[in-house]
Length: 194
Image 1 (cartoon, one colour):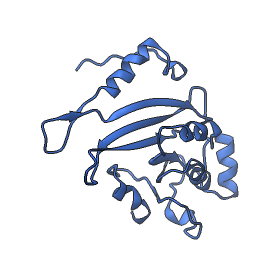
Image 2 (image 1 turned 135 degrees about the vertical axis):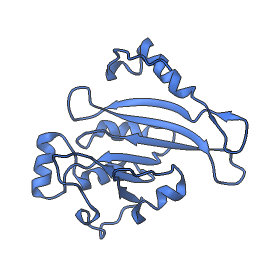
Image 3 (image 1 turned 90 degrees about the vertical axis):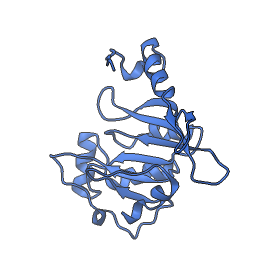
């Protein structure tokens, strides 16, 4: 397969004729239904959202339709949002709220602990703390939230860093190297049990 790289900035992604080919390639990608010879297109919408980190930093929202495990339902809509590096972003919250359906999974960076030092560093370096990321998930009414940030420079977050006494209306967990998370209701609802 020949790879081509286009000079399309994030700002032009929704409107550029060059980016239209990229979006078309993603949205026209086909997979075979499990155990069948028919195909479906899992990706329905791909968009980017400007966030607060550095110039041209963007989150990505991907709407999908995947085979359902529910009886009498062939495809189930899932929407995944990946924040990338960012401060808590009202722009991201607004876009997530305007999506066709609820955000099924928010993957949000949580570079710093939510203590005095972490809050100060997060503001200085345009990142988020654990509690700030979970608050974004609450504000967008996410179905589940996965906290992530892999960096050699900062201490890794662990479950003890976020009080389990604080209750959230959604399951949440921490990403780890090599984590494979099936995109289905059962896996997403068991995030807190990982």
